[in-house]
Length: 128
Image 1 (cartoon, rainbow, N blue to C red):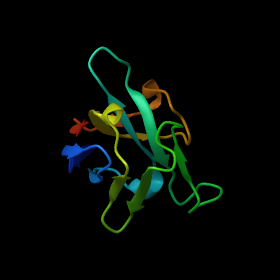
Image 2: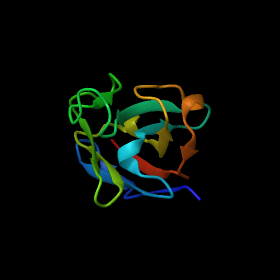
Image 3: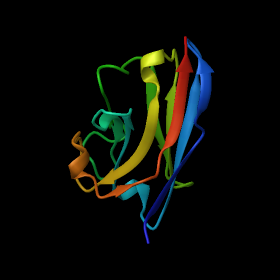
Image 4: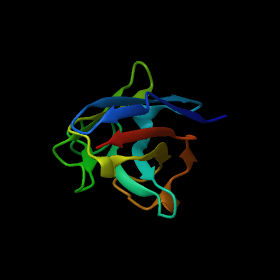
């Protein structure tokens, strides 16, 4: 069965950095659109970043970001390890959220309902 497992979350000071990972099993990351979402209590699950597989037009220049994280976050994938990463730099308190890894059959979609598989999340807390 498909399983996505996030890791690497934690607590950091504002301005700091954190790298989180999504290890996939039961699906091949290279064949899916992989994305990171984040959610805080009482809010919708919001799209953060996504990266397409090898069959996508424009690959490997296939990353997409929410405006709120452009220039600060970088999504990447290691197909040999079947893992997706999110490098987060210049972290702000408003980045505090539970971060989820997800997989979709469609590229560039930002609605949570369009994703087929989800991890259970990893908490990122940024203090001021």
